[in-house]
Length: 262
Image (tube, rainbow, N blue to C red; front, side, top):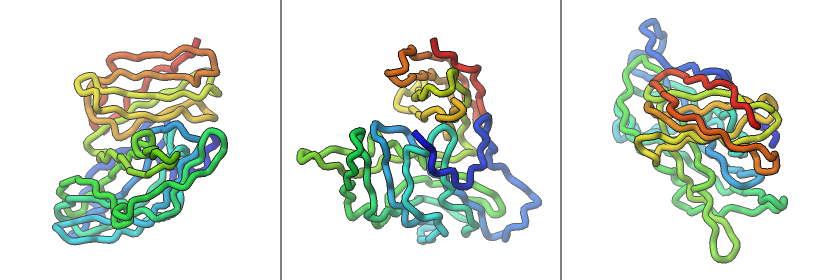
């Protein structure tokens, strides 16, 4: 799978630069800085294109339309540490109750046989997918939010062999999460990496390895202890590797040893 989106890549695959407070910040004392990154939890398709029109914030019950890096993005390229910066700007400080991802109508998928199919998109999505946050933005502070788009759960088949886009998105803030990084060898073997929280199995973060380097990065991972499973593509003939007891701490990256497929 080729990576066609390398926009604004500022995360090294070996680690994450987390947001921090800066008392020398030159921003207006009435504003906070907010950035929004879009990443993907993989799905079983060749391509999944979504049409991002905008991002809207609800601050102190007021709508704030954010300057958005709009476009049509293939979600399946946003793995292995790749992401898109959708927003990076100053907004009024206050209680951020929601972020709303506004989609257009140019949403399509490409099936394994190469067929391109339009995704039916409920009209409500065009008014904004509501992602509840309830976060107090303090003046002069930078905040980084991560939208993790779960492709596998977001595309629903219909009885008429059609597909409906019903996005399932997990949103986290870098200041309240950590990351897991590593690499596989042979690097050319594509693999699915899944981290599952040992205390709450509903908390699951996934990504694919980078097709060129074999590296991977799971970010926006809530603090806790995880089991990481690395599953090589079936046709490779290699077996899965399970790593137990992976500790994740807030604002830190847990670096795993190289996973060797046998």
